[in-house]
Structure formats: C-alpha cells, structure tokens
Image 1: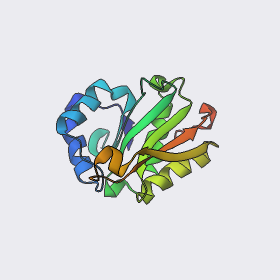
Image 2 (image 1 turned 60 degrees about the vertical axis):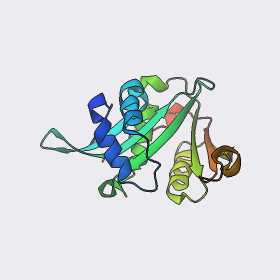
Image 3 (image 1 turned 90 degrees about the horizontal axis):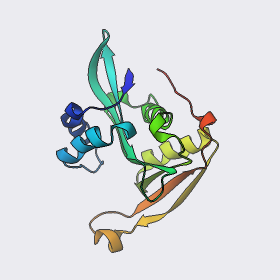
Image 4 (image 1 turned 90 degrees about the vertical axis):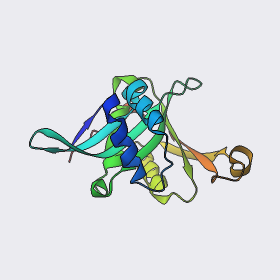
Length: 172
C-alpha cells in the first residue's frame, strides 16, 4: 500500500469511494475534483500497490487549514473501503498528512462528527491518546439552527495541542 498526494484525475475514484462508504455525506463530483486539485497538499489517497504499479484506491482523507484558524488542520472527510478496514489506515493517512510541509505550524486537529458516528469518535479518541493530546467536544452545527432539522447535529472535535514529535508514520 502507498499513501500519495491526489491529482485532479483522481476525482471520479474519490467520488466512487465516498459513495461506497455510507454513512458519509456525498459531496458533488466537482467538489471532490476541487479537493484533489486546489487542496491536494491537505489530502491523501491510500492505494493498494500491485507489482510496483498503482492499484485500487482504498482510502481518502480530505482536509484544509481554516483561514480563520491557521494553526488548525480541519479533517473534512475520511473514507476507507471495506478491504482497507481494520488496518489503522485512517490513522495512518492522518498521521501522514500531519507530517507534510503544508501542515507546518499546526497545533490542533479539528473535525466535525455526529453523535452516533462511533467509528469516527473512536478514530479521533485514538489519535488524541497516541499524540498525548486532549480531545475537546462541543456543538458546532446544531440540527435545528444550522440544518433546519434535515441533518444531525455536528460536534466539533478538537485535538491538541499537538507535539509533532508524537506523530508516527505507520507502515503496513
């Protein structure tokens, strides 16, 4: 398996991977294309390698540095295909991203998670423990106020401060 920076041509495969990973919210194909092009330094693709050649995409993490909080890295979406699960792939991709030059100066990792998304809460709790950092949780986007009742409340998960010496590039 290898982790790599996305390219614009990866947009359709990213869209297909997200569609295969319910309950992830599906972004438009154009949004995924822009993430691969404009935000490539803040995204990563995991793919199986077959005989030294690129294989099938089995993981995707998208993110960005919010202009209002440049010391934070926002994880937008984490998708892992069923065959990539159970291998700590999500943690590996996030650790990989956090070690890239584009994340220099990041002191906190942030994301939003619905209350019922146990897999995501488990992932971010494990990252906080591994990084010896605190995980804070508060309401960010309320079901009624921000989504007019059409989407569950999104809680902000904020991990930090992060000591970059605690980040690990896991292999496997």
